[in-house]
Image (cartoon, rainbow, N blue to C red; front, side, top):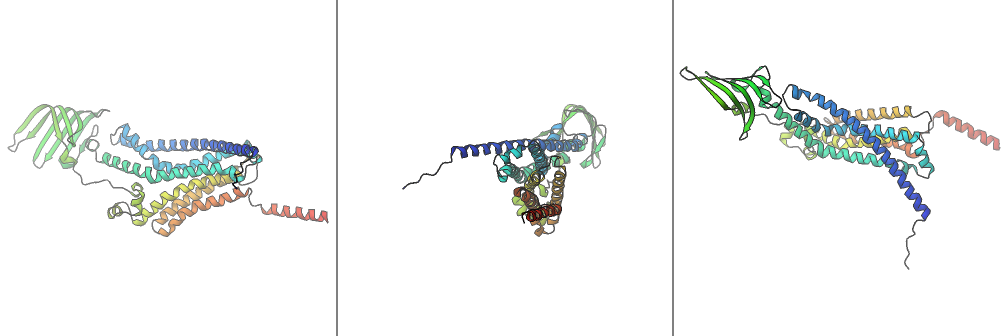
Length: 399
């Protein structure tokens, strides 16, 4: 005999649908607040980074595009630091408003369990943790490597090394360059080049000049100028030119290479570094500590949401607000995060301490979620004494 599964009644189906709608509403409200908080913090961070990169334009003569590129390449590392903080701030704002307007109370009165009530916040924390993990493992190393290459190109850029407006710049190989004016488009006005090679001396004067690359070799194209050079017999040779390509290859030779740090390496390289990476990036313990830091830092998203729930739902309802519990939750998160950074530094010399990189965020989150799931905090000593006296009075009255 075949049995058909029982379908939920219409009343149960409507109640289930209503609970789902309430959870979506709570998730949407929290997601909007968290997104706004993260966007504001990231915007402040990008502004700070852009101010730090202004020296690239002022001192190195680079374009605004290069500054913007370096600023954006530093953003992934900034995001991994800001996401847990933005999650804490946004969750506290959203939960405080929902509790102040009695929406969480109404949801509980409608029959929602405590887990159903907090599950939207937990889902948001898991999504944020996965996003932070993706940034740490894939986006940040690639961005850091590209930023390191760009910084190396700026540091070895002949246009920035040899030419400074209004100054005589002495470069490698006995070359000295003076530029009267450098326009925004890179055009150089009134350029003077002095080159001494042993006993031979040559000078170039050009009304205009520009850096370029020909067959992947650096050149300085001189226009409307002249060249003076003493021959081996001591005769001064002079000739004028409309355009003269000055080869900079002899002055561009360098044995420097891009040196990647531990923050620039991929996770497999951190876990199993080569001999060259150990020589340049750091010791094996330092690279291993960096690997655990990338894997464990997303767990602070769970800590942030757990502390936010603790601040709003971890105790009795208060009409005067939750300022004290919010301050306590923010302080607890700050202490946990600073302790996490300390453990990362300690793990560089003792790999066994790496387990605390995971234990700190998970332990704080577990501690904060206990009163939230239980629905109340442990009563104080005065409350326990009052309850005991009340039971004694009731027992005496019934006797």
